[in-house]
Length: 472
Ligand code: F6P
Image 1 (tube, rainbow, N blue to C red):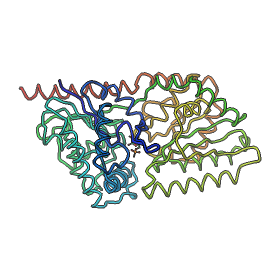
Image 2: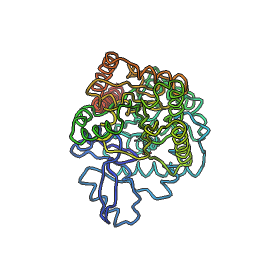
Image 3: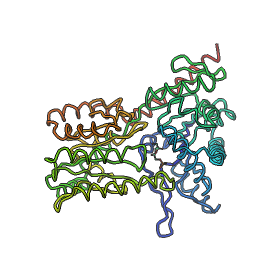
Image 4: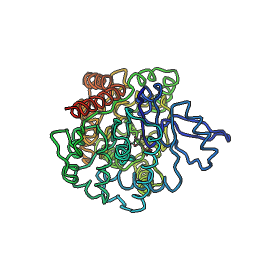
C-alpha cells in the first residue's frame, strides 16, 4: 500500500525537558492540525526537526522510538546547522528576500553549504522510508532543494511542494547567488503550491527567465515532465476556534479582560516578532490617531501581543529593542493616572486567552508589510461567534485576497491607517455584522481541511495526467 510522507522543517511536536524528563509538546502553528488527518493515517509519516538539539546517540534513539508511535520521524540538527541552515540561509537570506527586504540578506557561502547539507539530510530521511508509488509533501522555504534530491533517486514518487511565504518578483529573487539551484530544487516537484496567484506569477517569471523553462499559463515542462503551479490559500481549523470561544477558561479570561479594560475599547494586534509584520508602523499610526482624535483619549487602548521568534537573528533582536523603546515612548507621552494607551506583551498565550482577546477586541489590526497568508486575521474572524468586531487588514497579506470585507489598508500609509482606525471604531453594529458574516462564511468554507484535501487531490490529478501522457 502506498503511503504519504509529510516533510517540514519543524515536526508538529517539539521536545521539552521538564525535571530531567523528555516530554513532547505540540508545536505552534496551524499546519499540525491540518495535516494530522494525513500523517496519522496508517503507514503515513511526518519527517522534521523536533525543536531541540539532541547530541548523544542514545538520547536520539530514545526520541526516535518515542516519536515512532506518533508516526513522526526526527531529523536531528547540530548547533552549527541551526546557526547556518535555519538562522543563516533560511532566515537571513530566503526570509528577507521573499519578504522584499533584500538589504537584510547576508549572502554568506557558509550558509549555502549548510543549507545544501541539511536539505540532503532531510532528503535522506525521506529516502529511507519512501517507496515507489508514495506521495511526499514538502512544506516551505527551508527545504527548497528536497524535491529535486528525491526526484533524482526515486523518479516514480509523487512530490508536492508548498511554500507558506511569498515568492518575490524576479528582480528580487535573482539577487540570490544560488538562484538556479534553488529553482531546480523546487522544480523537482510535480505540484508546486503557493497561497496566491501573485506568487505563482512571480515564480513562473523566475523559472522562465532564470531556467529557460517553457510555460503555458500555470503548466510548466521540466525535462519533458509536466509540472503544475497552483494557488491554495491556506485556511484554519474554523470549528476548533468556534469551540474554544465558549470554553469555561475562555469565558473566565473574557471576564478578566473586561474588568481591566473597564469601558475602554480594545484594538488588538497579535504577531510573531518579525520585521515583515509592520509592528512599528502600526504603533506610529496608533499614536497619530491619539494625537488627531483627543476625544478617544482614555477611551481606547492598543493591546499588542508580540510572540518571541528567531531571537538569535540580529535583525530580530534589534527590532525587539526598537519596539520596546517606541511602546514606552507612546505610553510615557500619552498615559494618564487611570489609562494606559498600549498594553504590550512579549510572550505567547494559550489559545483560550487568544480566543478571549479576539472576542473582546473591537478592532483587530493585522498590518504586515508582507505576509504569505496571515492566519491571525482568520482566527479573529472565526472567534467572532457574536458577528461583531472590525478587521483592518493589510493589502500585502495573502488573506486580503479572500477577506475583502475587511477594511483593507496599505501598511506603509501611516496617516491612512490612523484614519481607518477612526472608521473602524465608529463603525455601526449593522455594518460590522454584515462584513463579519461574509468573512465568517469564507473562513468556514475554505478551512484547513479543505486546503489539505485540495492540495492532495490536485497532486493526484497531476500524477494521473503525467501517467496518461507517458503512455501516449
Ligand atoms: O510563516 C512561515 C513560517 O515558517 C510558519 O510556517 C511558521 O509557523 C513561522 O514561519 C515561524 O517559523 P519558525 O519559528 O519555524 O522559524
